[in-house]
Length: 166
Image (cartoon, rainbow, N blue to C red):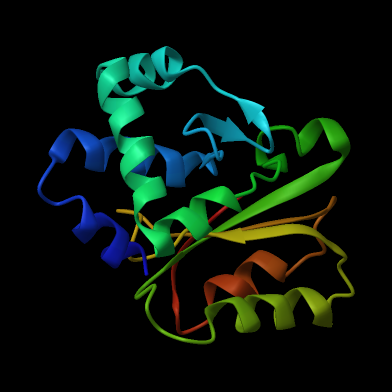
């Protein structure tokens, strides 16, 4: 799906940058063609500044999104969720970042969750960056702290795992 979206904007690198930024941040487009996040309008100038572009490129990208039914539906319903990884320590939680050998391989999330479940750890948040959209896909799991002995080494030993960062 992501590759289809990026392909849709392959004729305009500047608009493709806008779309990638919107997807990276969970931003949508509202019925009036404004960039928004969970119903709150985000000024086109702010988006343009963040990506080193022009407000008019942002506005034209939003209009183009609304003109295409599949993209319209996607971006009208896009929602952002909080990423607790930056505040996990303050909340008494640990962050386990798993870098896969091949992010397109199935079963990575399930294998890591099994290890945590075997140690009776409660998962507070989990998210995965899409391998078709991210240059460095990863699995991020936020759990209660402290981590029991052996958890990290068991995750690291999974055949799908290239690296584990705590």
